Length: 495
Image 1 (cartoon, rainbow, N blue to C red):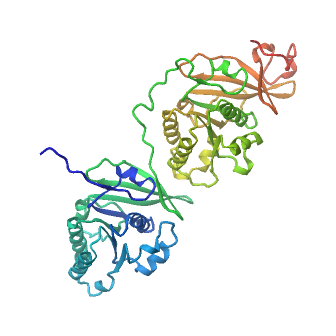
Image 2 (image 1 turned 180 degrees about the horizontal axis):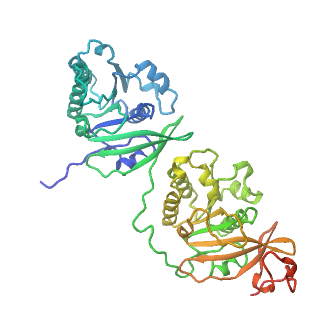
Image 3 (image 1 turned 90 degrees about the vertical axis):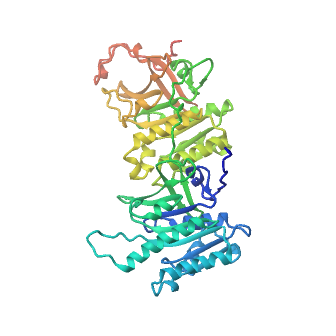
């Protein structure tokens, strides 16, 4: 008698939603899709309905206090999931507006039960009800009381039908404690839209889903011509933040002569590297060298270039790598991104390319591309992104714009230097009335590395590192004319 009952989970057909639900919608469950007006409730219901409905699994869609079926269908036809061949075959609409004219809610309940019995649907949708919150100080309106009682009775009936049912309602706030229908429901999906300045972000939450472990928290979603796509919030695994031990030959070469030696043998696999420096110091060039070296060694890469459009992609060399198919490019031209949407696209492309190297160029552009809602928690978002990517075994290189103050040593404008495993700093020094570039390795976690500051130049072949800054004596900050023993910048570096 210990045999468990197996509950079939129905795939919703909404990208990302099944992951939130714990595998799909439980068959024969009663679910509530709730939220404020305009947040996408009806669209979500239709996308699930058209995905699930077929001749063997028919769907019945009731419209009660919302828009009439003809108007609803006019707009739903604009989405890619809409299938007109299913109308009146696998999908049937019933308008109950006329049944409500006399306010006889019992009559409406009887009509719904009659239609269910005649059509024998496997899926039932009832759209939609506005929640009416009774004020303790206001007298009880019989019509209000009747509507609330009707919704509660309908919820009870929907749980008894051998069908997977959905009640769609406009609720301004979550009202689990004030409405019994929330208690009766097996699953509750809450949808909302958040305005911040001139930006809007839509979010969905699985408040409740009986019998299965759902993904907690708020998750962003986007509505396009294809319908709704959910971007589950990244949840860090227990081992994703564990210490990474460098063992044997588990390092990646950077593609820049001498830099591997300065880093103690290269960049350890699954590390995150932050390349910081002022504008024009060579951050994007170093990122390109990193990707090009990976392609040479048979290690595909991915780049998210937030500061350039694909037509202005950093350099001809990088354009060639992308065009060859060895490096994947994340299209980041649209603004108001969420961290989860960006991470979703990165993970998808990494898996598609089997990428070993990822470049984010730059964190400044990434922050600007995010919706203002997510910029407020940028450091937390960056923490999650780095942890998820490195837990996949991917090595991440990020660039960050940093004002060069010449006398101040800083390694991050976000206070996020501690989030990365390695830091390479690019700077300018003023010598003989000219700016010269220098490079140094600030840290490589759990690994010895060079403490030298070296000069480097950039030419058509990439980055060339040369002699140590310590070779040049008598350099006084701000007084290049006092330099003794003018150095030979073309000299070969020390071994």
